[in-house]
Image (cartoon, each protein chain N blue to C red):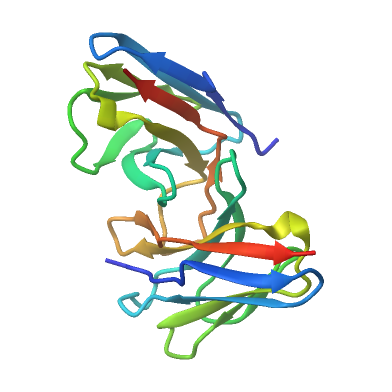
Amino acid sequence: DAKTTQPNSMESNEEEPVHLPCNHSTISGTDYIHWYRQLPSQGPEYVIHGLTSNVNNRMASLAIAEDRKSSTLILHRATLRDAAVYYCMGLSGGSYIPTFGRGTSLIVHP
Amino acid sequence: DTEVTQTPKHLVMGMTNKKSLKCEQHMGHRAMYWYKQKAKKPPELMFVYSYEKLSINESVPSRFSPECPNSSLLNLHLHALQPEDSALYLCASSQKTSGRASGNIQYFGAGTRLSVL
C-alpha cells in the first residue's frame, strides 16, 4: 500500500518559492507519485506527477528522491491563488487504489 | 473539454429517503471513481469503475449503490443513509486504471455536498 505522509500546514510569502514535502516510504518501483491540490469549495485539481526523474510543468516542479521514498512539490513563485490543500497521492500496486495523503494546507501571505 | 459535471451540487435528505448522485464526463475516459470527503480530511476512495464494470469496492456499506450505465455516466444511489454519511461526494475520471504504465491523471468534479438529517 502506497501510504504517504505530509506536514499538516506550511506558510509562505507571496512571490517566494515553496517546497512541499511528501514521504512515501512504501512505494513500489513502478508506482507513480501524483500531486493534486484542492481549493476551497472545489474538487481536487491535478498538479503534476512523476516516476523517477524530476518533472516540470507550467504549474510546478516535482523533485523525486533517488530512492523514491520521498518527493517535493516546488512552487517557484507562490501567489495568493496557490493557497490550497496540496495532496500527495500514491498509486498502489497492481490493484490500482489511489490513496491520498492527509494533505498540506498552504497559507500564502501577501 | 476536461470537465467532470456532478449534480446536484447540494442535497439534503432524510434517513428514509432514496436519492441519486450523478456524474458525467465526455473526455472518453474509461475509468470513473466515487470518493467521500469529510471536512478537513482527504478524499477517501469508495468505488472504481473500469470499462463500465465495478473493479474496486472499498468495503462501502450497501446503502451506497453505484451504477455505471455507460462510459460517460456514473451514478451513486443512496438509501437509508445515516447522519454520519453527510460529506462531500466527489466523482473523478481518468483514461484508464493502469497505474503502472502511465501517469493516469484524474479529473474531479466539484462534488455534491450531502446532508443527512
